[in-house]
Image (tube, rainbow, N blue to C red; front, top):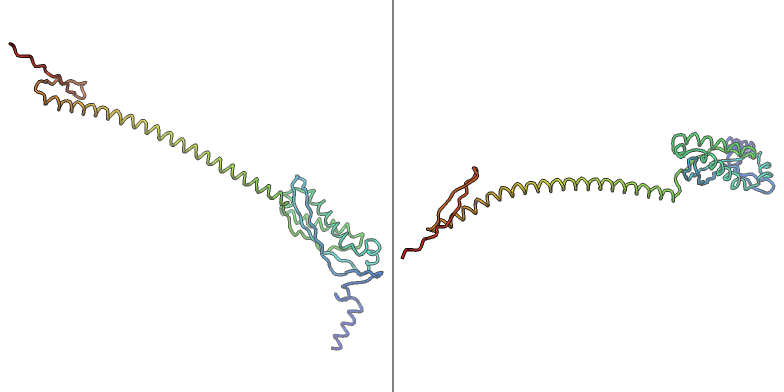
Length: 240
């Protein structure tokens, strides 16, 4: 127990504990010595004129020995003023100088490292330290997202309409050919039926005229089908 208390006393005296370094006061103003976090959202126009929304965060801290200088130059609002303003400005400047493809590609990791370096260079003269910078999200402005969605839907509708139009043309062509084929078939059938019907009518006429005692049969044809012809005999009146 004594050893524990002794070690704790030494740590407090040397200022090597998180408890001792949590806050410090200068000129009746309290300063937070812990690692703090700030986050911004920036609407960026890329170098190829695309609109993207970038959310970035940064972890930062100050050292106790630098508090007097920070107090004189920036004051206690450095954490809500200088740091987020610098994060916003550097994010906007860096990503605005690159294309949409570069931002959304693997090159984004290099851009993130460059962003952290740029921010640190801007804050170093004010004795503010950056521990980490992170991109929490990258996307499109909602209005742009809606426009992109509408464009995609329109393109799909056009593609669907083109396919349906082509399908309709194919169906019309098939229907046209089917109608032509049916018409040719009907002509062939009609020719055959006309010949058969003609023969049938002759046969019926034959049957009727054959019942008459005053008729004679004459058979003629074109060499293919003989057709009978009937001529009724006129009975001569008896002589007086």
